[in-house]
Image 1: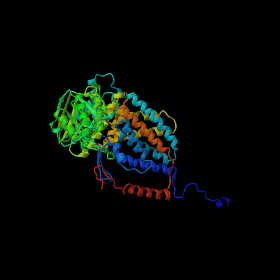
Image 2 (image 1 turned 60 degrees about the horizontal axis):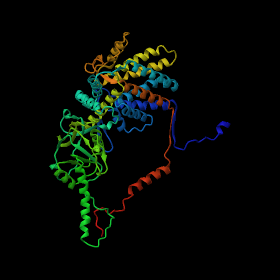
Image 3 (image 1 turned 90 degrees about the vertical axis):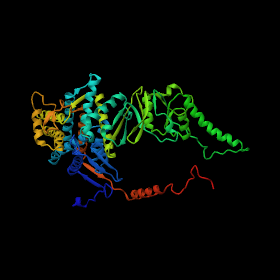
Length: 562
């Protein structure tokens, strides 16, 4: 009786949503599986694309797991973890984003029956961690090094890695063409770590094969004034001057006040303004530079002045383009035109202005330091070119990774099947429940070859049985066998040049296992209610923010005082 009279303890604010225990864990697993199902069909060379239409009316067509995950507005707190691992895979390795989401979803799916049967999640987590470490050791053991090869051999090996990445993208039909382009671009920048040294410029029109690589820098013709057409458009071995100043007639500041006692003095003040600009231009010409680039505007007076002296100029050049020219041509960007010495001027073998589609491009090629490259992409629709750019970004990342960590593994689901077989074998040596858990981890890895078959319209069960039989051969000769997308059977991935850098797989398995363990370790979700006062404040600040600054019409520079 006494226990019935005890008052109820209220710990959390009224309206707090708490859900805990087994049901909560199963619900989190279901949410993650649903997210994995979204990107499931995009895996592999026969994967489908997703068309995502956001609230602003922008349409994105993509096959890239990370892009799709970013654009999906996921509100479920546990499922957001999958978005994070896709992003981390994208920034770390560049490819394998769909793989990582699929694997994490599959690990959780395999764990679900055990959770429902009352297995403690910590037991699952312990086994998954063990399995993950074993899998990574096995990958390192199987991986083949491409170190010590000549540059030509290395290039062809890297092109094969790039072609494997591109085969699952929209531009897969032209993968050889783009793969060699990507390898040339990455080899051109050498050990330079900054990715922005490879520029990608998009020009609608033409077809994909019209895309080309510039060993140097290319950027669109900037806004130009009259007199621009009189400038020469081609130079051999010119000196390049890069500025971060305006070459325009500057009027005095609005609040400047000059008192004159004699009207004839007025002319000398006007002349002084002109002399300042002429002095600047004269110094540019005396430096011996034949090309003047500036991040800020180069006015009509300057354009004509340079044209009369056979000098090419371009103002309002994008900052990243100017930085790339500086890196490639070996110059430095100046913030003043006083005492310009030869050391700060860049140079290149050929500079020319070239028509690409309906755009005109300024192209600097044969740069001495050569640590930069530009890919000019052509294609029909804008969305298509955007997707081609994303695909090339993935391929560039992969080639860079393969250059740095020079080991590759067979793709096409071969490595996944081999690890799966190894883990199953290992599980038999373990007594206790963890044998079951490692077995389920091994089964989850088979999702990659299975999904490759499903997406290509083949009989997944049939192909997987063939693969299992091949991988189980005691001699180990079946290790590099994966799905053959073209025939619907199995084939030696190494012999068919379906390769991927081992770092992609290691990273994917690591991230997927971490995410699965993280989600399995959560047993309660507490969602705090938004307090009414906080909601009120938010609404008030939103209203205030909209009206701020609206009521003061300012006087512009050119406005007359009344």
